[in-house]
Image (cartoon, rainbow, N blue to C red; front, top):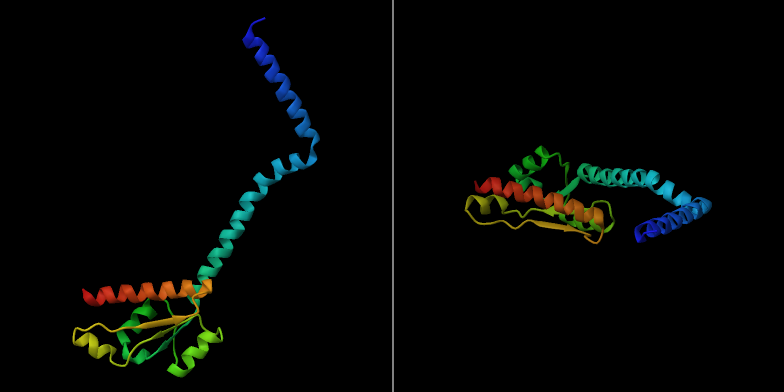
Amino acid sequence: MSTFTLRARQLRAVVGKEGVEALRDRRALASALLYPLLGPVLVALLFAGMSRKVEQARQAPVPVVGASHAPALMAHLADAGVAVVGVDAADATDAVDSGRFDVVLTIPADHDAALAAGRPSRLQLDGDFSKPASARMAARVAGLVQAWSQSVLI
């Protein structure tokens, strides 16, 4: 008998023995069959939950202090689907601290005058950025303000 035939016979015996043991072990069999079936379902549920959170962040209103100082920016935010809520400066900090709003955008009173004179205007975005929802909302608002500022420069 050749060495190849002997090794093939040994391999067949080991594979057969392991196959019989795997079929006898109910837990291993259940794991082998359930994970491929349940894995995609769990991944789909995770993606659905993440997309729901992103959609909630898109629909959340953004409070703005001094919204009347930047009508062009407010029009840009409205075009992007952001619901702008005007608040006063005293209420803005309480709104973030109480969790009523995720972020507050503050526009200085000299915003339009600074832009007309060719000077930059510093906008302030406040929030509790330790919360993921606040960080997502802040990133969205900052991105929209950045896009607006690029369109103003052009």
